[in-house]
Image (cartoon, rainbow, N blue to C red):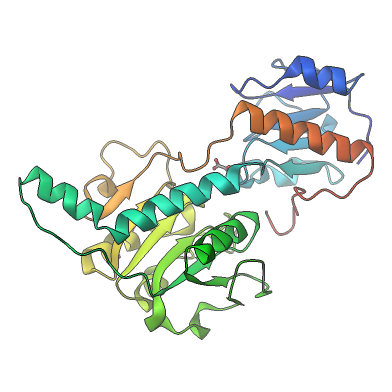
Length: 302
Ligand code: OXD
C-alpha cells in the first residue's frame, strides 16, 4: 500500500478522538464527511457514496469484515484492509461466561419457575464436559484461555487444524472429535463462502444435549436447523447474538423458540475508545512498516 494517506472518512456514529489523532498524525485529516480527497475509510460496510478506486486503506469498525468484503471485487488490489480487535475478545469472554454460568445454574428454568411461583431446588449442572470452539482466531483463543482457567477442557476446530493458545487440541474436522464428551459448542466463525450455512442439521445433530452459543455471524448457521435442533433437544439451550437478518424481523420464527436466548448483537460492541486506539496503533504501524496483527487476508475472508 502507498503509505501517504491524506484524508480518512469516518463512516460511523462512534465519536473517535479526531483532535488527538490529528495531533499524533500530522498531515492526515479525519472527517465525518466524504469528499473527493478521501483516500481511507473507517467503516463497517462500504458506504454507497465512496469511490473505491481512490481508497488505499479501509479500517473495519468491528472484528468481522464480511460486510466490507462484499465489495471485495471493487476494492483495489493494493488497498490494505485492517480490523478492530482491542477489547472485543475480552467482551466476548464476558458474554460466553454469562451464557455458560447461566446454563450451569439453569437460570432460564429458574426464571420460568419464578413466573409460575414455584420453588424447585434444581442442582447446578456439573461442568465436566468439554467445550468445542469453532474458530481459533483472536476471539477463539481468548475464549479458550478463559474457559481453560475455569477448569474446562477446550477443543477447537479450524481450517488449518493448527494448535493455538488456550486449546487442548485443535482439529481440522469435527468428525474426528469424541462427540459424547462435548457439553458446550461455541460458534466463533467468521462469515466466508466456506462458513455460510456451515452449522446445518447434520452438524448440529452430531452432538447431543449441549449448550450452543453463536457470537460470530448469523449466516454461519441455518436458522431453521437451529430451531429444529432446539425442538428436538439436541441443543438444550442456545444463546444467539447474531442473525441472518438484523434487526431480527418482528414476525421471525426464532423469537418464540423455546430454550433460545436472543440477544441483539451486543456481545462485543466497539466503543469510541477501542476504535480510536485501534486506528492510532494501526496507523503507527503502517507509518513505521511494522507487522500488522489486525490485517485482513482478503483471500481467506477474515
Ligand atoms: C464485529 C461485530 O464484527 O460487532 O465486531 O459484529
